Image 1 (cartoon, rainbow, N blue to C red):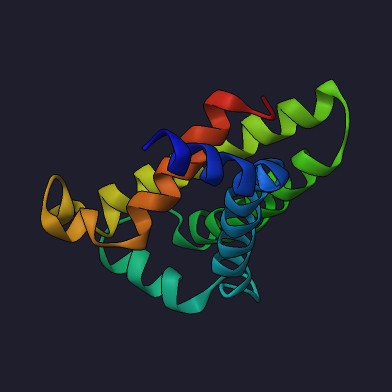
Image 2: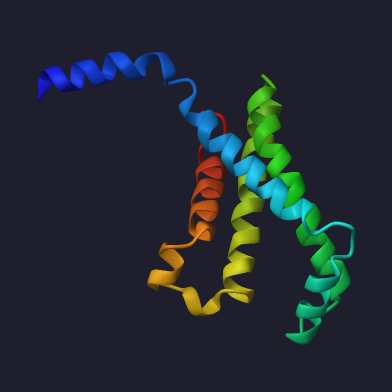
Length: 140
């Protein structure tokens, strides 16, 4: 067991710096694409759906979601590229925005998923978890 662990450690060590980037790039790209797919603004399908379920000012809210998703996705990636305390803040704020957006998605679009198998077999729970991770850890 010890030999296997030592071997795996020696194989993985050169790649440990890439591990956070796997999470950062995946989350950033996925969130950017989710938001970008809602352009041009306002996203008509989302406006219609939000209006049908009683969301006030559906044009504004749906546009804010699209802008928030694209901005948070870019922020997660840029926060890792910039080397300053500002980058740490950008990462944390972007992670927090992703958390809030995903809580909204769970509450509005997937309320029937709470604490069910559907929640834990969807990509949404991972987006929420990764956003939470970066909101807590920032660039640390």
